[in-house]
Length: 185
Ligand code: FES
Image 1 (cartoon, rainbow, N blue to C red):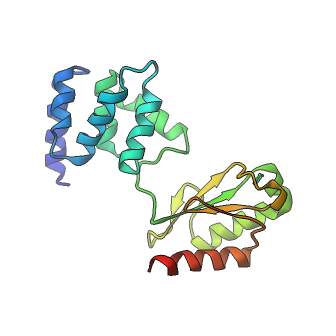
Image 2: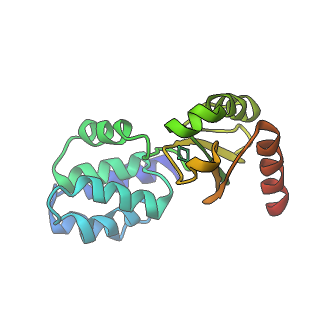
């Protein structure tokens, strides 16, 4: 997306703060992130306490909440960008950058911790070369914590692209990651 085009979109959507006209204009924006955000806002902005539902909706639509979306949300809900940004950064679930091709979630809850989960988490960080809430440099994996997958009797557990795996050792995790990449190469 061209930066000047995005700025122009932001300016035009900010013409009538919180108004229907501004939202209509944003929905017609040539910048896909702004148009998608405006569609979500049109559906959800009238809910009581709309910010969190809107953020969830935008992330569902776009895979993340980019800066253009923050601006559009702030205008529509009559908030400052700092307020919207503060909520996004408070909840680890929300991301400002798109996730990688695959997501590895390592359980950090009590039962898994007691069964080697901390060692497994350290191995995952070293193996992927990134911390939690971050992605590998090659864009293959995003590493996220998760708090109980319902597999406590078979700890430690992880989830890869929504698929749970139990009794995961570092070696097993390596094999799972390799298999995940092979399945999509
Ligand atoms: S604590 Fe990890 S699956 Fe329940």
